[in-house]
Image (cartoon, rainbow, N blue to C red):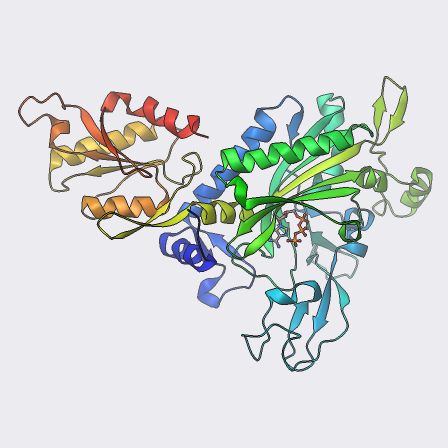
Length: 470
Ligand code: ATP
């Protein structure tokens, strides 16, 4: 199981409507992709399962959905204006621009078979390149009136720490979860949706007292590895933990462990779990007195709120420590697609492409297929069954009669539909009394085994198999 090359997955995604290159009819926009009808379902399912696990199944978590546009001083005090940079080099020969620490991901503009630095071209010394996108705020293009598109969702949580604390009466430890878009002006967007300029993150900022942080950090690492394996179906053998060396840590981090997944392009980061200490809450409320004086001059220039917590036990204000699990939605989608993809050779020698997605992640849960599309009784029964499954409100079910049954099964296998339901003459009870009236054939995607099931039992049976299975 699992794709051998990224091309297999890219081609399936385009062919079947999971993902398309962004702005394709105008020649595209590098580093952007659009999720098609099946892709949006898969992505929404992944996000829903993450929210379910991290918010609904816990008692210590709140949710948030903060603005993408934020006051630009957020990014000054978070440290991003200064340090959210990648090293950029130019090639004096081909005029290409590349990320100095990822030359192996890039190709020379004159000879696409060679990486920059391996060819004739001479590279400049690396210089820092800030990855935040800027956009103008308001109608007048004044150099002061701009905002950044957020490069991480985390800061939206930090600046709302006080609001959530005051409105929810939470006590430490507790966390705030958020799923949302982030933007990075990546120097070399590459590898399909692995590295893009617009993507989504699923993040938690978990606030605790200093001293609890190391243990909570380890617990999140273990819990999130288990989530990727048990809920998303990634194989444990393809996951490795990477202890980020001190020299490579982000400016806010005391320790970061990356959950790495073996994609067909190699072992790469899927989720980073960082101990951000009191860095962010502290920087947004640093030097309170000085800030209040400055705020009198320019009220927007500094935070005037102290992002601290009153600890009743010690009767003092303290700045909590923060553990941050930060996962990419798009990298998650790519990982589950790569893991699930299989080209299986059948007994008759034919090859079938099958996406062995966890049923809860599958875009379509059940396809109802009439054995004969010219038989009004069969068609009506099939549509009724599809409506009945749709009415559960918990699954996307479709009706399809656009090909013969064998071809319809293959199409559903390729997009990961776990169950096909076939309506035939027995369903209508027209044959000799054979006890099969009001029953259908239920076909399992993975085993291709078929069983006869009463129509009335279908909703409960399918819901149990789909959601009980993850
Ligand atoms: P990388 O080293 O691959 O650039 P990072 O360490 O900068 O990643 P983080 O800042 O830790 O990434 O972001 C958290 C998560 O957001 C990553 O684990 C990844 O899943 C996702 N992510 C970050 N950058 C991108 C991107 N350009 N495209 C898609 N997903 C991304």
